[in-house]
Image 1 (cartoon, helix red, strand yellow):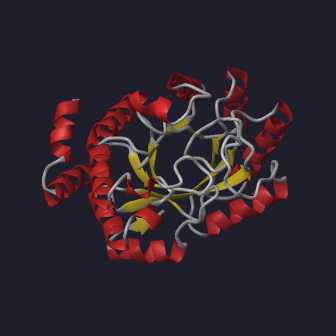
Image 2 (image 1 turned 180 degrees about the horizontal axis):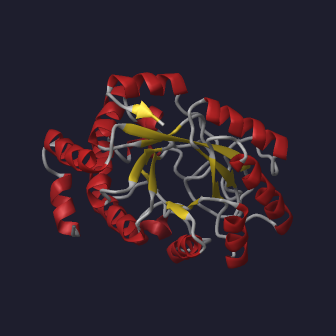
Amino acid sequence: MDKQKLLQLYDINLDELIKYSADITKKIFDNSIEACSIISAKTGQCGEDCKYCSQSAHNHAQIECHPLVDLETVKKTAESAKSNGAVRFSLVTSGRRPSDKDFQKILEMVKIVNSVNGLTCCASLGILTENQMKELAGAGCVRYHHNINTCRNYHSQICTTHTYDDRINTIKLARKYGMEICCGVIIGMGETRENRVEMALELAEINPDSVPVNVLTPIKGTPFENYFDKITEDDIIRTMCIFRIAMPEAQIRFAGGRSTRLSHDNQELCIKAGVNGVIVGNYLTTTGVDVEEDKTTFAKLGKVMV
Protein backbone atom coordinates (compact mmCIF):
# COMPACT_ATOMS: atom_id res chain seq x y z
CA MET A 1 0.00 0.00 0.00
CA ASP A 2 1.40 3.42 -0.94
CA LYS A 3 1.87 6.50 1.22
CA GLN A 4 -1.04 8.46 -0.22
CA LYS A 5 -3.49 5.63 0.40
CA LEU A 6 -2.33 5.24 4.01
CA LEU A 7 -2.64 8.99 4.59
CA GLN A 8 -6.20 8.86 3.29
CA LEU A 9 -7.03 5.94 5.57
CA TYR A 10 -5.43 7.71 8.54
CA ASP A 11 -8.08 10.44 8.27
CA ILE A 12 -11.26 8.41 7.77
CA ASN A 13 -13.89 8.03 10.48
CA LEU A 14 -12.23 6.33 13.46
CA ASP A 15 -14.85 3.57 13.79
CA GLU A 16 -14.40 2.75 10.11
CA LEU A 17 -10.63 2.70 10.45
CA ILE A 18 -10.76 0.39 13.49
CA LYS A 19 -13.09 -1.99 11.63
CA TYR A 20 -10.84 -1.96 8.55
CA SER A 21 -7.84 -2.82 10.71
CA ALA A 22 -9.71 -5.41 12.79
CA ASP A 23 -10.96 -7.23 9.68
CA ILE A 24 -7.37 -7.60 8.44
CA THR A 25 -6.29 -8.97 11.81
CA LYS A 26 -9.11 -11.52 11.98
CA LYS A 27 -8.20 -12.94 8.56
CA ILE A 28 -4.67 -13.79 9.68
CA PHE A 29 -4.58 -14.20 13.46
CA ASP A 30 -6.53 -16.08 16.11
CA ASN A 31 -7.67 -14.57 19.42
CA SER A 32 -4.32 -14.88 21.20
CA ILE A 33 -2.19 -12.07 22.62
CA GLU A 34 1.50 -12.95 22.81
CA ALA A 35 3.20 -11.85 26.03
CA CYS A 36 6.88 -11.08 26.36
CA SER A 37 8.92 -9.58 29.18
CA ILE A 38 12.25 -7.79 29.49
CA ILE A 39 15.06 -7.19 31.94
CA SER A 40 17.15 -4.04 31.97
CA ALA A 41 20.35 -6.04 32.31
CA LYS A 42 22.50 -2.89 32.23
CA THR A 43 20.98 0.51 32.94
CA GLY A 44 22.18 4.06 32.25
CA GLN A 45 25.39 5.86 31.33
CA CYS A 46 24.76 5.46 27.61
CA GLY A 47 26.94 7.49 25.28
CA GLU A 48 24.24 7.92 22.62
CA ASP A 49 22.32 11.21 22.64
CA CYS A 50 18.73 10.03 21.99
CA LYS A 51 16.57 12.91 23.19
CA TYR A 52 13.79 10.73 24.58
CA CYS A 53 16.00 8.55 26.74
CA SER A 54 16.54 8.79 30.48
CA GLN A 55 19.59 6.51 30.16
CA SER A 56 21.61 8.87 27.96
CA ALA A 57 24.65 10.42 29.61
CA HIS A 58 23.93 13.51 27.47
CA ASN A 59 20.67 14.03 29.38
CA HIS A 60 20.06 14.75 33.06
CA ALA A 61 17.37 12.31 34.15
CA GLN A 62 17.59 11.03 37.70
CA ILE A 63 17.58 7.26 37.33
CA GLU A 64 19.26 4.41 39.15
CA CYS A 65 22.14 3.18 36.97
CA HIS A 66 23.73 -0.22 37.37
CA PRO A 67 26.33 -2.34 35.55
CA LEU A 68 25.52 -5.70 34.00
CA VAL A 69 23.45 -7.80 36.41
CA ASP A 70 24.58 -11.22 37.60
CA LEU A 71 23.44 -14.52 36.15
CA GLU A 72 21.27 -15.43 39.13
CA THR A 73 19.27 -12.20 38.75
CA VAL A 74 18.60 -13.04 35.12
CA LYS A 75 17.46 -16.55 36.02
CA LYS A 76 15.09 -15.36 38.76
CA THR A 77 13.65 -12.58 36.59
CA ALA A 78 13.14 -14.96 33.66
CA GLU A 79 11.37 -17.49 35.90
CA SER A 80 9.14 -14.73 37.27
CA ALA A 81 8.32 -13.57 33.74
CA LYS A 82 7.34 -17.12 32.80
CA SER A 83 5.06 -17.39 35.84
CA ASN A 84 3.38 -14.15 34.70
CA GLY A 85 2.57 -15.69 31.33
CA ALA A 86 5.46 -14.53 29.18
CA VAL A 87 6.67 -16.81 26.38
CA ARG A 88 9.58 -14.59 25.35
CA PHE A 89 12.17 -12.90 27.55
CA SER A 90 14.56 -10.21 26.33
CA LEU A 91 17.94 -9.16 27.66
CA VAL A 92 18.25 -5.38 27.25
CA THR A 93 21.41 -3.35 27.81
CA SER A 94 22.13 0.36 27.60
CA GLY A 95 24.95 1.74 25.47
CA ARG A 96 25.98 1.54 21.84
CA ARG A 97 27.07 -2.09 22.33
CA PRO A 98 28.33 -4.26 25.21
CA SER A 99 32.03 -4.48 26.03
CA ASP A 100 33.75 -7.74 25.11
CA LYS A 101 33.73 -8.79 28.77
CA ASP A 102 30.03 -8.05 29.22
CA PHE A 103 29.16 -9.68 25.93
CA GLN A 104 30.67 -13.00 26.96
CA LYS A 105 28.56 -12.89 30.11
CA ILE A 106 25.48 -12.08 28.04
CA LEU A 107 26.04 -15.21 25.98
CA GLU A 108 25.77 -17.18 29.22
CA MET A 109 22.57 -15.30 30.05
CA VAL A 110 21.04 -16.37 26.73
CA LYS A 111 21.54 -20.02 27.65
CA ILE A 112 20.06 -19.44 31.11
CA VAL A 113 16.91 -17.87 29.67
CA ASN A 114 16.46 -20.70 27.18
CA SER A 115 16.79 -23.21 30.03
CA VAL A 116 13.56 -21.89 31.59
CA ASN A 117 10.88 -24.22 30.27
CA GLY A 118 8.53 -22.40 27.90
CA LEU A 119 10.69 -19.31 27.39
CA THR A 120 12.68 -18.27 24.34
CA CYS A 121 15.43 -15.69 24.54
CA CYS A 122 15.47 -12.36 22.74
CA ALA A 123 18.04 -9.60 23.06
CA SER A 124 18.33 -5.85 22.61
CA LEU A 125 22.02 -5.00 22.84
CA GLY A 126 22.48 -2.06 20.50
CA ILE A 127 24.57 -1.81 17.35
CA LEU A 128 26.51 -5.07 17.49
CA THR A 129 29.49 -5.98 15.35
CA GLU A 130 29.05 -8.79 12.86
CA ASN A 131 31.09 -11.19 14.98
CA GLN A 132 29.00 -10.37 18.07
CA MET A 133 25.79 -10.95 16.14
CA LYS A 134 27.07 -14.29 14.88
CA GLU A 135 28.03 -15.38 18.42
CA LEU A 136 24.68 -14.23 19.82
CA ALA A 137 22.78 -16.32 17.30
CA GLY A 138 25.07 -19.27 17.97
CA ALA A 139 24.35 -19.04 21.70
CA GLY A 140 20.64 -19.54 21.02
CA CYS A 141 19.17 -16.05 20.84
CA VAL A 142 16.02 -16.46 18.76
CA ARG A 143 14.96 -12.86 18.17
CA TYR A 144 16.86 -9.56 18.03
CA HIS A 145 15.17 -6.33 19.03
CA HIS A 146 16.37 -3.09 17.47
CA ASN A 147 13.91 -0.25 16.90
CA ILE A 148 14.13 2.29 14.11
CA ASN A 149 12.46 4.59 16.70
CA THR A 150 11.19 6.99 14.06
CA CYS A 151 11.17 7.44 10.29
CA ARG A 152 14.28 8.24 8.27
CA ASN A 153 13.19 11.84 7.67
CA TYR A 154 12.82 12.59 11.38
CA HIS A 155 15.75 10.61 12.78
CA SER A 156 18.15 13.56 12.96
CA GLN A 157 15.69 15.32 15.27
CA ILE A 158 15.94 12.42 17.71
CA CYS A 159 19.59 11.36 17.71
CA THR A 160 22.92 12.48 16.20
CA THR A 161 25.41 9.95 17.59
CA HIS A 162 24.31 7.20 15.24
CA THR A 163 22.44 7.20 11.95
CA TYR A 164 19.21 5.68 10.74
CA ASP A 165 21.31 3.43 8.48
CA ASP A 166 23.30 2.19 11.50
CA ARG A 167 20.00 0.82 12.78
CA ILE A 168 18.97 -0.68 9.45
CA ASN A 169 22.35 -2.37 9.03
CA THR A 170 22.12 -3.87 12.52
CA ILE A 171 18.73 -5.35 11.67
CA LYS A 172 20.14 -6.80 8.46
CA LEU A 173 23.00 -8.43 10.41
CA ALA A 174 20.59 -10.06 12.84
CA ARG A 175 18.57 -11.45 9.96
CA LYS A 176 21.74 -12.64 8.20
CA TYR A 177 22.48 -14.90 11.17
CA GLY A 178 19.00 -16.35 11.28
CA MET A 179 17.37 -14.39 14.07
CA GLU A 180 13.80 -13.16 13.99
CA ILE A 181 13.38 -9.39 14.03
CA CYS A 182 11.59 -7.25 16.59
CA CYS A 183 11.59 -3.67 15.35
CA GLY A 184 9.32 -0.81 16.32
CA VAL A 185 9.05 2.87 17.08
CA ILE A 186 8.33 5.55 19.65
CA ILE A 187 5.48 7.87 18.72
CA GLY A 188 4.66 11.21 20.31
CA MET A 189 8.14 12.72 19.85
CA GLY A 190 6.96 15.67 17.76
CA GLU A 191 6.65 13.79 14.49
CA THR A 192 3.84 14.55 12.06
CA ARG A 193 1.02 12.32 10.94
CA GLU A 194 2.90 11.95 7.65
CA ASN A 195 6.00 10.83 9.57
CA ARG A 196 3.93 8.11 11.27
CA VAL A 197 2.78 6.82 7.91
CA GLU A 198 6.42 6.85 6.77
CA MET A 199 7.31 4.78 9.85
CA ALA A 200 4.66 2.24 8.87
CA LEU A 201 6.00 1.96 5.33
CA GLU A 202 9.63 1.75 6.41
CA LEU A 203 8.80 -0.94 8.97
CA ALA A 204 6.84 -2.82 6.32
CA GLU A 205 9.95 -2.80 4.13
CA ILE A 206 11.98 -4.27 7.03
CA ASN A 207 9.22 -6.88 7.50
CA PRO A 208 9.75 -7.56 11.23
CA ASP A 209 8.10 -10.43 13.07
CA SER A 210 7.16 -8.16 15.97
CA VAL A 211 6.52 -4.40 16.01
CA PRO A 212 6.60 -2.88 19.51
CA VAL A 213 4.88 0.50 19.51
CA ASN A 214 5.95 2.79 22.34
CA VAL A 215 4.21 6.06 23.17
CA LEU A 216 6.69 8.58 24.55
CA THR A 217 6.68 8.88 28.32
CA PRO A 218 8.20 12.34 28.84
CA ILE A 219 10.87 12.02 31.54
CA LYS A 220 12.23 14.95 33.51
CA GLY A 221 15.83 15.68 32.60
CA THR A 222 15.46 14.74 28.92
CA PRO A 223 14.97 17.23 26.05
CA PHE A 224 11.47 15.81 25.57
CA GLU A 225 10.41 16.18 29.21
CA ASN A 226 7.50 18.49 28.27
CA TYR A 227 6.28 16.56 25.20
CA PHE A 228 2.92 15.60 26.69
CA ASP A 229 0.93 17.34 23.97
CA LYS A 230 2.73 16.02 20.88
CA ILE A 231 0.22 13.26 20.20
CA THR A 232 -3.46 12.72 21.02
CA GLU A 233 -5.10 9.46 22.03
CA ASP A 234 -7.03 9.57 18.76
CA ASP A 235 -3.73 9.70 16.84
CA ILE A 236 -2.29 6.82 18.87
CA ILE A 237 -5.25 4.61 17.91
CA ARG A 238 -5.05 5.69 14.27
CA THR A 239 -1.32 4.92 14.18
CA MET A 240 -1.90 1.42 15.55
CA CYS A 241 -4.49 0.84 12.81
CA ILE A 242 -2.19 2.12 10.07
CA PHE A 243 0.62 -0.14 11.30
CA ARG A 244 -1.70 -3.15 11.13
CA ILE A 245 -2.86 -2.21 7.63
CA ALA A 246 0.72 -1.71 6.42
CA MET A 247 1.95 -4.92 8.11
CA PRO A 248 -0.93 -7.40 8.10
CA GLU A 249 1.20 -10.39 9.19
CA ALA A 250 3.32 -8.71 11.88
CA GLN A 251 2.66 -8.91 15.59
CA ILE A 252 1.72 -5.37 16.62
CA ARG A 253 2.81 -5.09 20.24
CA PHE A 254 1.85 -2.69 23.01
CA ALA A 255 5.06 -1.44 24.61
CA GLY A 256 6.01 1.51 26.82
CA GLY A 257 3.62 4.35 27.53
CA ARG A 258 0.33 2.60 26.90
CA SER A 259 -0.94 2.94 30.48
CA THR A 260 0.18 6.55 30.90
CA ARG A 261 -0.74 7.91 27.48
CA LEU A 262 -3.92 5.93 26.69
CA SER A 263 -7.13 5.53 28.66
CA HIS A 264 -8.16 1.97 29.44
CA ASP A 265 -11.06 2.24 26.97
CA ASN A 266 -8.73 3.37 24.21
CA GLN A 267 -6.30 0.57 24.99
CA GLU A 268 -9.21 -1.79 24.40
CA LEU A 269 -9.95 -0.10 21.07
CA CYS A 270 -6.34 -0.70 20.00
CA ILE A 271 -6.65 -4.39 20.88
CA LYS A 272 -9.90 -4.63 18.93
CA ALA A 273 -8.16 -2.95 15.99
CA GLY A 274 -5.30 -5.43 15.87
CA VAL A 275 -2.79 -5.11 18.70
CA ASN A 276 -1.96 -8.75 19.44
CA GLY A 277 1.20 -8.59 21.48
CA VAL A 278 2.10 -7.04 24.81
CA ILE A 279 5.08 -6.54 27.10
CA VAL A 280 4.11 -7.70 30.58
CA GLY A 281 5.75 -6.31 33.70
CA ASN A 282 7.86 -3.16 33.81
CA TYR A 283 9.93 -1.57 31.04
CA LEU A 284 13.45 -0.16 31.25
CA THR A 285 13.05 2.86 33.54
CA THR A 286 9.24 3.12 33.62
CA THR A 287 6.53 0.93 35.12
CA GLY A 288 4.14 -1.24 33.17
CA VAL A 289 0.67 -2.68 33.68
CA ASP A 290 -0.15 -5.32 36.30
CA VAL A 291 -0.34 -8.68 34.53
CA GLU A 292 -3.62 -9.66 36.21
CA GLU A 293 -5.18 -6.43 34.96
CA ASP A 294 -4.03 -7.31 31.44
CA LYS A 295 -5.47 -10.82 31.69
CA THR A 296 -8.82 -9.43 32.83
CA THR A 297 -8.91 -6.98 29.94
CA PHE A 298 -8.00 -9.64 27.38
CA ALA A 299 -10.67 -12.03 28.68
CA LYS A 300 -13.27 -9.27 28.46
CA LEU A 301 -12.37 -8.82 24.79
CA GLY A 302 -12.40 -12.56 24.05
CA LYS A 303 -8.61 -12.74 23.88
CA VAL A 304 -6.22 -15.21 25.48
CA MET A 305 -2.71 -14.32 26.64
CA VAL A 306 -0.11 -16.83 25.46
